Image (cartoon, rainbow, N blue to C red; front, side):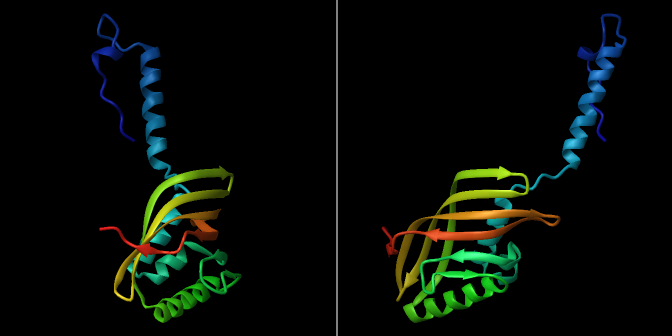
Length: 174
């Protein structure tokens, strides 16, 4: 615990520490150390872990941000994946879709959080994103929104469902 240095403002006119001021100084020191010791993980941390891992090609990290029975809605057939193994099934389908469409160099940039609601161990987040990629060598982009439902477990927040909503990608403006 860090105890703040006693300054002239904590001393009375005779240079003595008043009981009231001592009590206030100790309360501030104790509450400050309690806050520092308590790590409050925000629900958005799971979203950041997923997208950062996805961008780095870290499949295990991206998958770890999800519950095992995640529900996913994305823009390519069959458009939804759910239940145990859904993340891997979605990723396999995405890979096949990208190979068939000549899509490479995908990167999801996170924008502002548009909305965040938390109720106990559940959360809802809407985030602006920009997906950039190459399609047959042409630089493309799509401004989008991703919506996430999350659940807090002992290990932290995990994504229980998400959806990607965007117009079709278009050639990126120089």
